[in-house]
Length: 542
Image 1 (cartoon, rainbow, N blue to C red):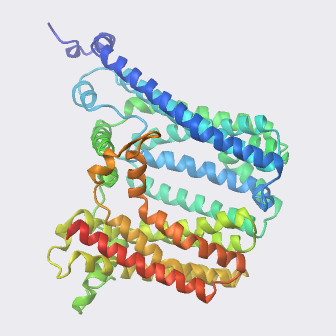
Image 2 (cartoon, helix red, strand yellow):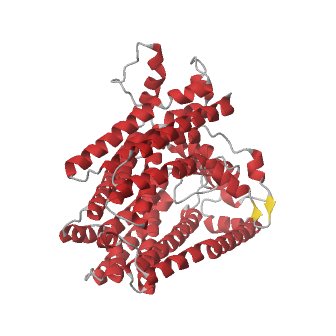
Image 3 (cartoon, one colour):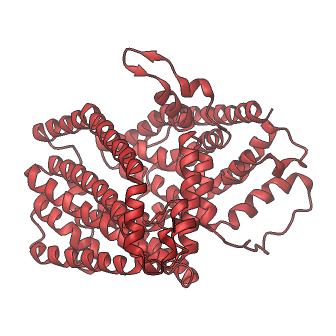
């Protein structure tokens, strides 16, 4: 029997052949999708819905203390959140892509002279559906929370949030298709576009922080709402929550037109996606699936970076040291210099940590406590960016095979450069607060807690694969403990940091100063965190 793939004009015959051959596979996938939907609905009904109802009761009884600045800055921070979500969706297209074909389709079907649109467009529709559902759920939850904080009618605000989330997911998917379509031709331009986009989102975030802390003129929020497409998406939600967006009826068709244009361009670009791009993303998808199935998140992250085909970046100004004891700090600094994105993100998270603590110092109640906890979390994220060399050495011990250090001593040496960088970043943030008039003695808790954050980040860097007995778990009346044990094992550094440093940092924000007892406790936690990182490295590579 002659294969239908041999006919140049046999696209319809090929599709009929595939429809019959893959009917059983489609049935199994449909069952898996229904089971996943059932699990998500069950999880949402058990955990998410009660939490939202609790928030609703709190909002109906009394507004959250200190929420007025958050509502006043809504026209600024809401477009920032939507722009960040769109950028993350587009950025994921670099390694995943909104059009992911399986290995069999890429290897056996696409090389033949058949139309590619009917093969790839259903995958685009599936990806767009998933993005739209995620956007709808996220936007609806965000609108519901805003409604309960503002005291507005929850139905109209929730519907406006659904509208904003739906458009954000669809627009991000359409732009991701264009990124994949032109990645070979615009590789350098794309890199520059992403840098400009990140800088733009960072600028919007800075304006939002300033608006929360000190307030901004009305024209700033008006400009953001009308000059950016995400401002058009945010106007209905802003009007429903605050009633201060009189032109939202005009912004809705503008946002709908933007979504339609991005969708049309994506549909036209799908058949022209290079085969190499599809083949690369199919390989990454297979590796990602295998890594996630084994809960090896670090291997999954390395699979994401298969897409990055960058050459080594020279760092001529980082000269090799003349003293042997400086070799390891020099390697760490060189590794970070050759990945400037990590340095940038580390500085951004450090700045957000200082800003969150400064905001907490000027507030009281639950808002101050949450801001203090956010400051500790941001400090951990900054340290996690700076300890990237330790993660590389932990994953591949051949990198340190010739160094005269044991695993525990090596972990302590890896804390030198991150500690210095985090101290410099936090010091710069405090200097900016002093110049801007936002200084408070409570900000001293940020640099004091920096070594503890480095220790917690090093514990995560040397965590290794998940132990098998944690994956198996134990059967209890509430279910198997495996997922909870695995989550705690992955997040044990962050959880310990939040429990041990969160209360003293919150106390410093409430008292307006970091006293001697709080500073001594934070230093003690720092020593304990570094010793814990040393022990973790010894157990992993001892």
